[in-house]
Image (cartoon, rainbow, N blue to C red; front, top):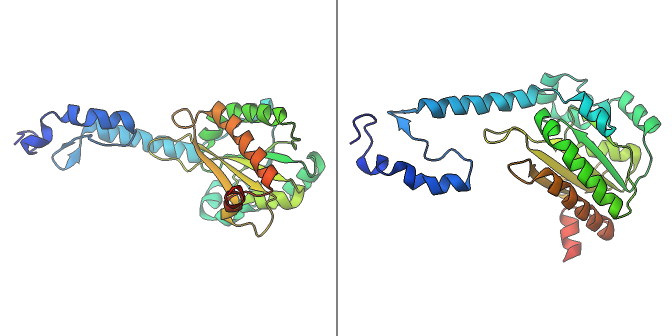
Length: 250
């Protein structure tokens, strides 16, 4: 027995060597050891640090200068910019308020082939870290495909289903929604891209495509932007997304 941890000999001998290979393949907390019934101090401190980063991502703010640089104007949902309401009432994050609808009609191109939108969702850090690279790469991809784009904009505290409300207002052929993912203890800056063909009220979740885990430790943002362009091209070709796209592709 190990006199410090009361662990069996086979547990602590060659501990680092046994887990070294596994640690190279995953950021998960494996083989972190313990001191009696408790985690090691360094492991506990790392856990608390990652948890704090996740909380900061949820309650953090998106860099306004970044949105201005990319040409995104801002609208709001029925959560009325209240974070606690956004967390407790997901349904309100799926609906535009009236001011937002009026602003879209006055500032946006109607019926574009592709409408790009973005939202902090549950991670402002995801937008701050990834939006610029994904967006610029995506725009370059769409331009090379000679597809017309609508006016990009940012939604404060949006949910995925909000793309249906936006579809009803602007009538785009395809909506691509760049949104911050719920942060975890491995990454607090991961972004997802939801894509839907003609999203409208009544659209179901299986009608959407999603590419998730977009961040420097997952799918690199620049590569993600280029790849999203090829998905949009396919959606326009088959006039379908989600499961329907899969079925049409055969």
